[in-house]
Amino acid sequence: MLEVRNLSVGIATPSGPLALVEEVDFRLEAGRTLGIVGESGSGKSMLALALMGLLPPAARASGSIRLEGDELIGLPEAALCRIRGKRIGMIFQEPMTALNPAMTVGEQIAEGVQWHENLGRRAARARALDLLQRVGIPEAARRLDDYPHQMSGGQRQRVGIAIALACRPRLLIADEPTTALDVTVQAQILDLLRELVAEMGMGLILISHDLGVIAETADDTLVMYAGMPVETGSSAAIFARPAHPYTRGLFLAMPGHAGVPAGAGQRLQTIPGSVPEPGRRPSGCRFADRCAYVIEACRAAVPPWEPLPGGQQARCIRLEELP
Image 1 (cartoon, rainbow, N blue to C red):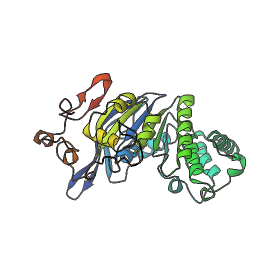
Image 2 (cartoon, one colour):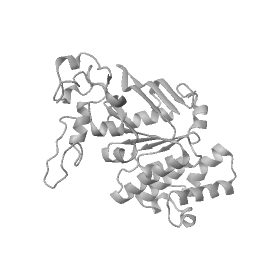
Image 3 (tube, one colour):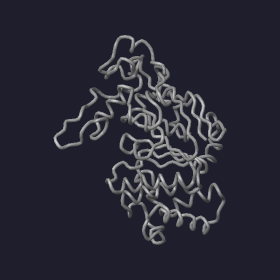
Image 4 (cartoon, rainbow, N blue to C red):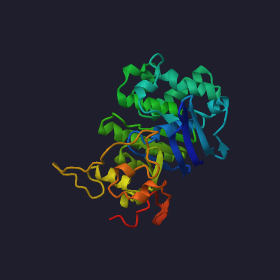
């Protein structure tokens, strides 16, 4: 359904082009979920904006994004407007800023339906009511005329999901859909997303920094670091055998993962340093400056993909030598 090949995003600066995202490749089939994980600054949200055609004015995408056979790179804005909302829906990271405070939630859900499907106001409002009920808003008929500030964080997130689903898209992108939600509401949102993927047969891209969220929801996982994928494969394979040193570091920093006990008083490991900013990234392996296994050859060139059993791949030249 979705095929991304050699996708890169760059921005022009007075000192030359600056790469934000580089060499992203993946495929997503209908009815499956791809999890994209990495620290803040890894390029996850920029990748999502590239897929939606919502990059900042100075940024440019290259490579290929094919949705059900149709190439999206290079499409004019008018054509992208007909795709956004209709064929691709997006749940944005922070619902309070994503929702319009001057419009009722019913108006915001109905707006896309009226635009893409040319429905009248009454029919669009009926669709909005159905969607609010579908995403689990209690007393949906009454809440239809509420404004975003009158709802809790979890309810606003459900409204964001309803807006993204209003035109029954083939692809849904969820950018940190459970950020700042308590554990109970987070579980409800993830359950809802799983149900919708199964029911509507759409593809879901779930972006998160939380490995637990990815483990619960995603069929396949793409690990991003400093704008570049460093490991990919089925979630089962990656969670059973994380290969890249960066992926291992993420797992070791999570309680209860990768053999690390979740008991009280257990000190978790950390990854030293921070994600390098664009323009300050190493010329070779992006993780070289933070990696405990780095050698000089790691800095010479970007490592190629190394195949692993079960279709898993990782960008590391020392995979066979790592303990």
